[in-house]
Image (cartoon, rainbow over all chains, first blue to last red; front, side):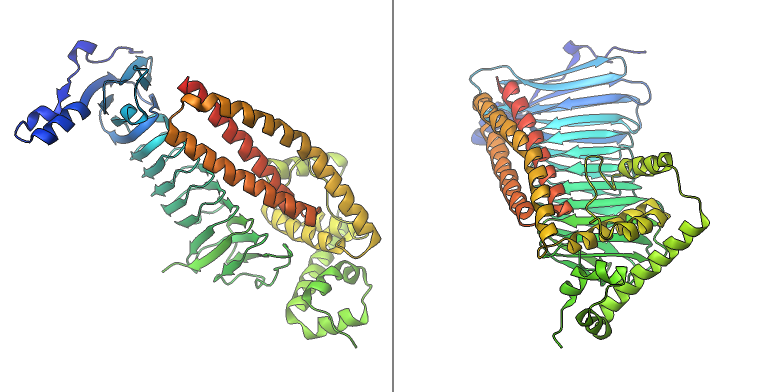
Length: 293
Length: 225
C-alpha cells in the first residue's frame, strides 16, 4: 500500500492572493490578510477513505478520474492550520486552531477536495456548508449549522445535521438523514431506501418509487410533501397525529381510513400494485401527497 | 332515534365486529358509506384470516417469535412495546394480524388495527380508565429517570461550551429549545391519551434527539477546550 504524498510539504504552493491587486489598496489589504491557499496531493489506491474535519467553512468535494486526492485549502487567517496526512489508503484532513486569541471568524477555512469517484467520505463541518458531487462511495456527513448538498451520489449516505438543510439531487444509494430544524429536499432520487427525520424542518420528496424500496419520511412539525405519478406503485401509510393529510393519489381501498389519530388524520392504501413502501408520519405537521406536475 | 357520528361508530367498531350491533350503530352503518366500506374491509380481512386459520395448523411459538423478530428488524414494531389491543377484541385482532401475508402490509394494517383497538378502549368505560392509568404509569416510569438524566447532562454540557464557537453554541441551544418544546408537547399528548402509541413513539424519539444533541454539544465543548 502506498502511503506517501506525491509532493513533500516543502512543495506546497502558498499564494498571497491579495498581492495580485496592488492597485486596489483596500481590497489588497483585505485579501492579503484573508487569503492563504495550500494545495496538497496524495496518491491513493481504489476505494480510498477521505476524512475531513473542518469546524468552520465550506467543504466542496468533487470526483475526478485521477487515482489521487487533491486538497486545496483556503484559510482566512494564520490562526488556523490545515493538516492533511495519509495513512495507508486513508487521507485525513484536519483544520485546527493554532492561536489561543483567535476570534471565531478567524477560524474559517474553505476546502476544495478532488477525490476518485469510488472514494468513501467522512465529513464533519459545523458551520459553513458541504457540497459533494459525483462521488459514488459511501458518505458519512455530520454538521451543526452547515447545509449539505449532494449531487449524483450513489453510495450509502448517512447525513446528520442540527439545523443545516439537506439536499440530494440524482442520488441513488441508500439514504439516511436526520436533523432537528433542517429542511430536506430529495430531487430526482432513484434510491432503494430513504429514511429522513427532522423535527421542525420540511421534507420534499420527488423521485422514483423503486420496487421493494422503502421511503420513510418523518417530522414533528413542518410540511412533508411527496410527489407521485399515476403510474407509480406503492403501499402508502400517512399519518399526522395533530395535523392534516392531503392526498391526490387514487388509493385502493379509497382513502377513508382516517381514524388513527383522534385530532389529526391518517390514511393507508395502495397505489397500483404496491411495489414500494411509503411511510409518512408527522406529529402536528401537514402531509401532502401530490401529483407530479 | 338518536344518531351517532363516524367517531362514535369507530368507538363501537370492536363490538360491531363481535356481532354486538346497537340500533344507533346500525343506523349510522346504513347512512355512512365510508364506515360501511371500512367495516366491510375488516370483515373481509377477518374472513380471509379465518380461512387461513382453518386451512393451516396453528404455528408454533417459534414461528411467532420469528415473525415478531422480522417485524422488529424492519422497524414495524418495537421490542419494548406492549400490544395495545384490548382483551375483548383480541381474538379477531390476532387472527387478522396472523393472516396478513406481507410484512409491510402487515405493518400498515397493524397500525390501523392498533388504532381501532385503541379507540375501543377510549374514554368512557371503567376499564379504559384503568388501562389509561396503567399506560400513563408505564410511560412515566420509563421517561422520568431518562428525563432526570438528561437534565443533569444538560447542566454539565453547558459548562463545557464556554470556549466553543458562539454561532455554533447558539445553534445548539436554539435546537435544544426546539427539542425540549417537542418533549413537552409529546408529554401533553401522552397524558391526554396514554394509549396513543404514535404519541409515545414521538415522545421517545424526542428524548433520543435530546440525548444525541447533548452528546454533540459535549463534543463541541471538548473541541473548544
